[in-house]
Image (cartoon, rainbow, N blue to C red; front, side):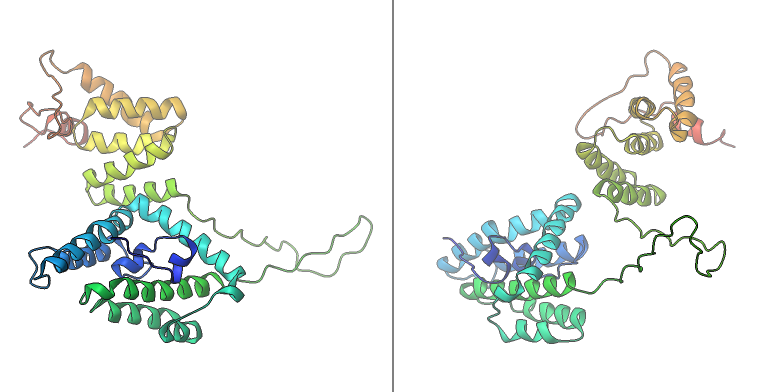
Length: 317
């Protein structure tokens, strides 16, 4: 069975995953997962809501063809970031084509006029979400309604007025007296630049490292390196993650890569000599084991925190 939806963002050959899950466009991973689990329980064949064979089949198709793909796209940080970038581009395009946009539901028309955009939008999404999957036959129509709200929200967000540019300063020819202006006036600060996708990965990873959440930080940095393998900052950060997990050989590899890309990398310059010294002091039978379950961790045989303890701490009292 195909679910044809031709309203809202779907009208522009775009799959509106936010509408499928009925979550706001700015929903975070935690909110997306919570909503997905609620829908999945509702559509599961063993659910009390799907008693007949036809209902079970319809619920399974909604789950496999719409809900699961939406969750897979929106739950991952990288795929969600890329998806949001596409959404913002669509919003700007729709603003330029606003005269050709047709709204079918009263709720979308109200959202287009309300002065309190964010509150009205999120309240409407939450209200629809309460009953979105109660009637499985009506789900495509409900998704279309939510997608119209997303379309209006995107257009209004993209058309919000930005700060006006500073007035252009007239050029002053040599020899022409200048108007009386305060001396030593500091130049206008440059507008902040929007973080690149790589910088977002690095920022999240650094925050996770600060919280000692090294496994999650490593995932962020591995994804960043897939996009930009020659980023010295990413190599240096993931080396620190491996170092804090006592995986010295992996840390050395990434510190080496960081120094090849940036010989002045301070973190690599500080820690690589210590790692080289520590690795040189290991006994010959100190092997690195590797399996899918241990994450390439090195066994700790020192009895006092291993090599990690030797690098970061002192002797136990």
